[in-house]
Length: 72
Image (cartoon, rainbow, N blue to C red; front, side, top):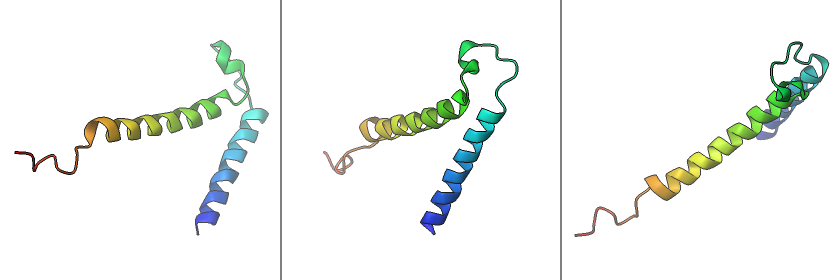
């Protein structure tokens, strides 16, 4: 079941990549919008960076030690 989901996800990413190459932004306002499929890479790596940062923040700042409430 996992491999089917993974294949569907990879096919969707590939389809978006190809659609981004076939239909580039017709009216770019900024220089990075002229780069083909920049939005796809920015969104993908930005979301991964956000997840990694949130996990780091949760483990290093929000989590308490196991014996946090037992200290007298």
